[in-house]
Length: 118
Image (cartoon, rainbow, N blue to C red; front, side, top):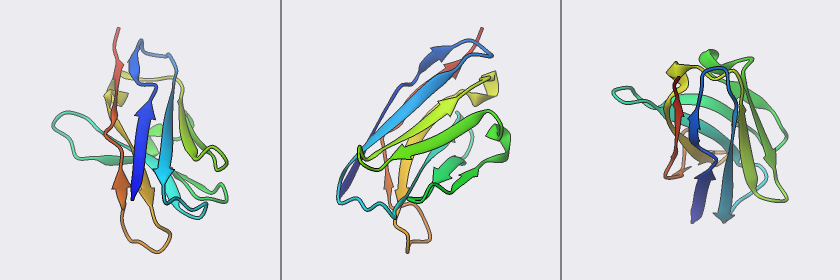
């Protein structure tokens, strides 16, 4: 079993920055793909960013150039640096883990709320 615990959410003004962290515990492998998704009220959950064990990254179109995903395999932690935040980035951000051989996300965190507002 795997547990994912997010932290770092909060309130920020437009143009500001936040850094999210996700600590993983349980049966984790360095080849698992970790990442972030988000869900705003009334919207479907969408991809924000993923990162492979080797550091390969993938970003949703709306965050490219503003967000950076990274991971520390020794600490079993994945990070999301969010810069130039916009009101439309307001959402609950969920950490995710997908086994390399899986077609979909296998584990989710409980989420952390990010609110961008003036």
